[in-house]
Length: 250
Image (cartoon, rainbow, N blue to C red; front, side):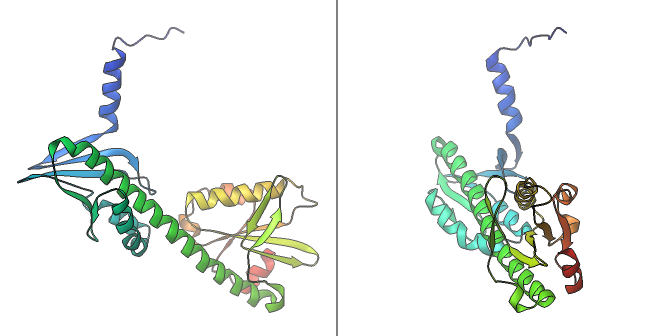
């Protein structure tokens, strides 16, 4: 098979790639740049540049706050964004990340600073929210297991278990009739599913005679990605299941 070589020079190809990476839309005295940076939810980071009397306003137009809100992390974002903005040398007014009265020669670094600050603030808020959410679900899991098996059966702390290649922390573990059952909370985010699958696969590699039972406690089955993959490594149990369902799972 003969591959036809492009007639474009490498410089022109690079220009075309750059133009494809950055989307530009203009209206009145404002230009919006959609940049090749992604928020945790997958949306492109956007920065708006507006002309002022003595320079330019460079802002995320509240996009970072909205992205954090979509993940339920707006409260965390409000606390985190102020520190992030200061670190990047810009400002945050509880609505948007911005730099004010930017000279034309400083537009490029201002756009970079606002975009990276917006992305970093949302990422940090998402991590904080996920950790808090996971802790709440873990407390609920311990309550459910205590109801199902009694207070003596459950220790209110994560359990470390040695898999085939390394040790893993699980949200709970129970000894049932001489057989260990490991429970892991899975929230409806790809990284949570990936983490659980990695742990369960390593435990599975011990072999069915040795490997403990594995229960994925799924907080939102309808919105959880890769549920079929997760189901190949563990038994899936909706978090709101009854005490009897928890007993049957283990």
